[in-house]
Image (spheres, rainbow, N blue to C red):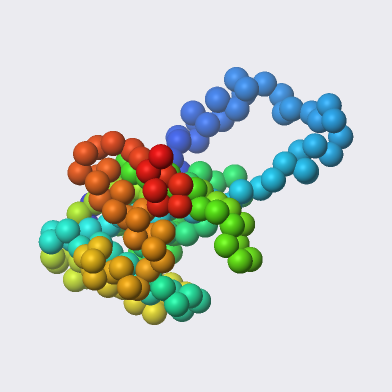
Length: 185
């Protein structure tokens, strides 16, 4: 398995600390309460992990009726890439790498879920042995499966299918894609 050289953070802690010092003192509110009125937009970080045959790794959540890619929601003060790394460790154990950003996708509000940003990172290509050795490490998941995009289509939300098609293309071309609801714009 390709190991992630820096599994807990994306920016070196010293670089982050130095950057915060350069930013100056924390900003104060000139208009009291304005910071609390700024809308919060959730984000999620997921990984496009493939096997040698080009099939994509999907996880089977216990809490929803569709497949997802490994990853999850970004915690407060956590970057999308760091969230992706954390979620991969929680869901599948250590060892999977998180590479380049492939897709940033905006999703509109749906039901109880606010609009959000979905980040897809390159999770690399696993050998047959690595793929066979993968196991879920999270009680939220029933299992995992490698599927082609066509095989996955009836088992994922259409927007995820579109986003993954863009991610596969981005991985092949080395070009990051911005999308809205799975449509490149």
